[in-house]
Length: 252
Image (tube, rainbow, N blue to C red; front, side):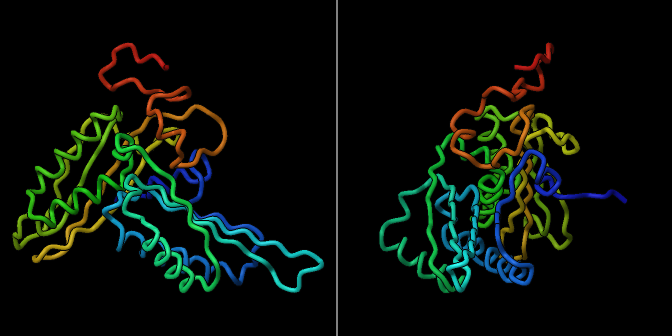
């Protein structure tokens, strides 16, 4: 049998940074913080999917000086999304209050805008788009082909989509997939984004998986998976952005 692993975990610590970053905490607090971070992400994904959330990063820092009786910790939530207009002042207050109930302390939320053209480089946005189309009774083949077309227009090197479940309401579940370009899952230097979403239909749940090849990284050091600099220009130095049909194969 094939041994499979998540493309995100496979590259974490090599050319991708961690989505949750903690420093200065004791081992007994790690399990509790892990549950809190998962609740924070589920809250945003369940209530603000229309804002095209690309990624959620959580940073926790703590310090204990000789003058402090207790550890003072800070929590920063970085929300990368394409539609910031949905977060008005009243909505922001509700979000802060809800997250404070989850973590039990003050929280600072930073909204990072992502350009609409670069949102399609996010596997999660594409997977959520396909899932929403399936829930709205769009044929799954049309939903996948439209998503692939939008991704390839933004100069991605490859994209693959997979849907599985009771497609079209049939009794027997099956899996169908479409791909365009190259998806080198085993190449660690490849900037491969991956996401999994679920579409709830009257006949049952349908799983959606998306892989997007955004180029190859030749620079040393960790790169954040979602940064304004990276998403501002899909073609940049240090990446092999030649299309698969390029015969020369020269590195730019």
